[in-house]
Image 1 (cartoon, one colour):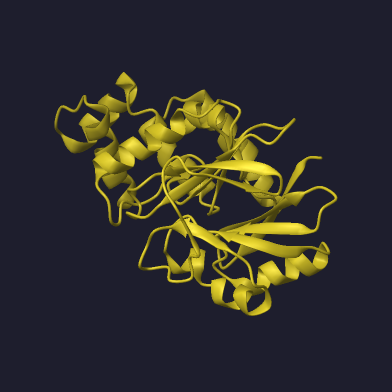
Image 2: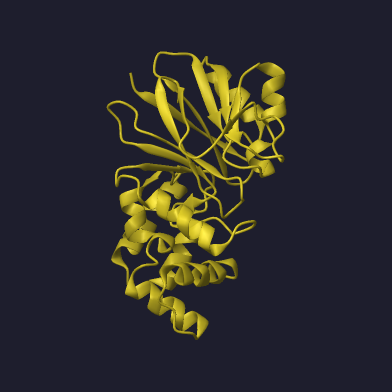
Length: 260
């Protein structure tokens, strides 16, 4: 049976992800920043919460844990972080957990925060997927709040090593603003122009632009393209310094995006 993933909008632009095996009631939620929308989704689809997955400690990813635990006595999986006291199962790079008959592998992807995790899986008969929180976005990446540019670059490289068909379940609807920035970095990219047109149509219809796929991100996400001469040239021109090392290119375009 396929793995079913429900999109739960929250706050202004967050996405919470609720998944379960088709035909089964046991469901798991990723990054419940708000508990009530999760409870509403469970009721709407006649599901029971069986566990919670956390990618990192920011409140818009953890703020609903208390509410959910008041209704369900379930495990909370996540990083070994003093900032998330509700974690019952601490996870590390290389750990595997089986949820909804699906095996998830854990990646440590610091940069946005020091405690950031991603969860990857290859559900039987479906494309692989990753729940990547705020590290990799459609056409963008997270701000570097706690880690270093080097850490963020290495974390993005881990995600970039996943199969092309991997579905990217990030935690925010930032796509159109990210695409606008990407077009400033690579103004001649036809792939960016095409993706922008497609995603503008989705948003006009009230549809999410997430998930993307890693193949699409390789063509349109500047933070996965820092090894290319065109990105090095754009970063060098913006900084007025010659840049060539991919991590330095990534650092510069992240600073550029911070002020875009």
